[in-house]
Length: 173
Image (tube, rainbow, N blue to C red; front, side, top):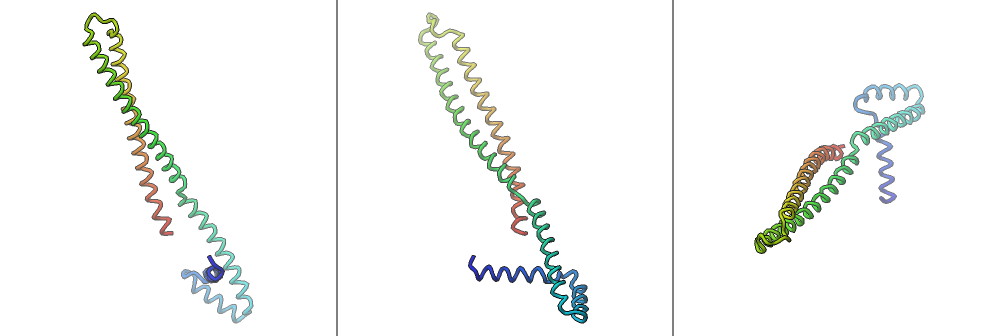
């Protein structure tokens, strides 16, 4: 912002502060008329006091609006949820790869057991049970990650909705 813009801005702010509100314009017009008759110099003191009070009221209003319309917590929460979603997405990929490996391993064990037949002591029922348990465990964890992802998606959707309601209010004000 250059010097001319700052000067214009200061000029506009000054007149905005001392300009009477439309609600009490009639009262102020009467007060100004009386002051002009009695002591014209008193108008400047009155206008300065009025500007000071309007400035304080505007400051309080701005602080209140700032507190009411502060969307930083929602924005930070949305970023944290996005981070969690990214981590869950990575974990989903890892569990999908683990499931592929474990299922291939289970198929290999079954194939090895069928090739060697009953005479093999290398592929026992205990080994097959452990492999089956491993497959079920990886599937269970993958399903658990899926449910966590759904919960994170719903949370993100809710916060996004709330966030979208807050943003137009800020543009409006």
